[in-house]
Image (cartoon, rainbow, N blue to C red):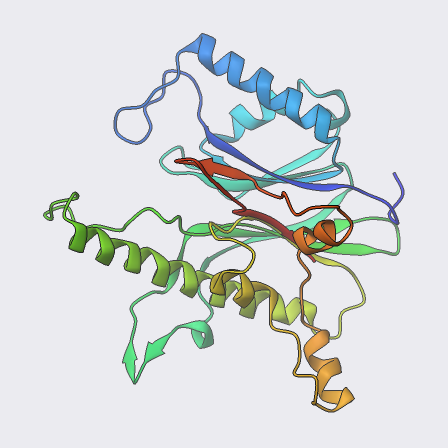
Length: 275
């Protein structure tokens, strides 16, 4: 592998759970379905042939390791997971490069917690722990990779309300959006510390549950500087910007046909790679 030319991917595994284990109250994989799911994922990974892959929706590390064992070039790779308990989905990363260290973030930094007109919003934790991994691309070059799965668009509803009530549904969607935005803000603060005055690549991969132009996605990547700012001011802003591979791909293509998710006939890009 050449550290100047390596592939990075992201893969939402859509609930990778061991067989005969109940998840989400009533769902369960039969052994034969579990084997088919692993084989399909392994096939996709072979096609991707990526050196570093961030995963989402892992319930059991064993299930992912069994899948990776089916892919020859990952049999000697290193897998780290964000403490999957089997109770809810987590993120993970596999790397064909050596992993120097990794850490989890479950709580927001104190300064990243939001308030509106002096009223504090009681949001302090990521819905799914954030994973930061330090990878050695060579003896002299390191790379920081963040793997994330932000709150979905699924409405957050109290148990007592009518889930089909349009007003309650709207309120639930608003709650989900606020949480996703709060998570994006906290993640942005954590990443900024790595981005400032850096001398190595920083990559964010994962399912952010929003399009590339959504406000939450722009919070993560940062806004380009105003054209009339002084160069030194622009330089400080450029230093902490991330650039979405979707935009790079679109500029190199004849058309913009990028999507990672299809639901109810709508084609969306929820999964992103930025750096």
